[in-house]
Image (cartoon, rainbow, N blue to C red; front, side, top):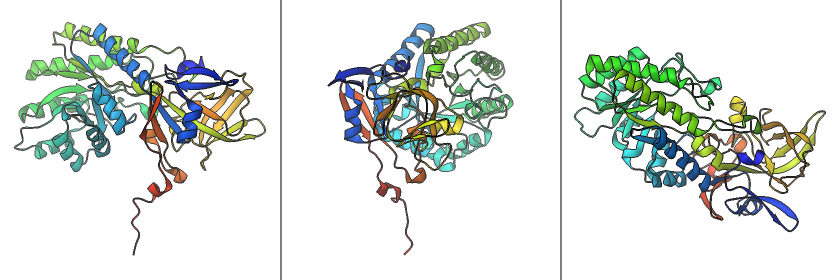
Length: 437
């Protein structure tokens, strides 16, 4: 069952009396020898498969126009951006940095979306120049936009981010739609914002909400869609406006460990949204909008694997520790909100389990623990372990804590590894230093 968490091209191969893991035909032992560890691997076939599942499901269940937005915050570099661009996905950027990476990957202005709860004047000005869609978070931002766009005709399409007052069942740190959330406009503010856009001839084209990230039951999306469609009905009657686009955000979860299996399918999530939106529009006599989904981690998480080398084994009174060469600096999710992972040894991964194992990193924090009480075989110092479902919110949230150098990232396809992000070196850590004379 643990193998099903890995990318779809993962195999156990046999050579010279040893079994070893491969992904996309690449031997993980060889990759670690060539590129070092910690090392992040992305399997193109798994990404392609997840994208195809989303698109086929949308085509099957939604009779209107539909599209997908890639979450830059999950992980974005130029190489990933080029894959996104080849598949004509939109890209959600938060802040000038993500926008710069996306533009460097060649993603056209029409496919760039900017989010953000507190866009500064420079970020707003850049968004006006560089993106096709800007998601407005608050009334102050809307007023600033009017000032920045005075006399201009090339204004991005605007969406309003609604705060429905609801949240999905997930960790409190990743809930975003509740009434006290820092994100979005209240319903009363949304009415004001729509009127403001119409009175000032701003190109308002869409409505957006996002209830939270990494949830596994789509049911809470139904009342949120109902709230949005009720608002649209009221605005249509009062002002004659309806959105061209409705974006119910994203956040569909993925299985990170055996405890999460079996996991509801992507189709269950997409079909639920599509059917409820169609039904709600029909009941209210509203035109069917374009449905824009943000797959987030459910598109890319399974494609990624983190590869570490064991430095030593430590036995305390009741715990066996595997201490590895990475941890919270490249994956803060367990320390941040208790994320649970699984792992396999790269060599002879099918050997019998010895007992529960704690896998910790080298950093000076007791919270630097990637996995707790995971059944693992007898592992020796120097061995490699692979942690699956490492494709989202790991490298993008990584840090240089304790002077850690961020890992290299490889793109795997048909037996060929390609370096898409080089490993940091210590010299990179002082590249921004300004030394007083």
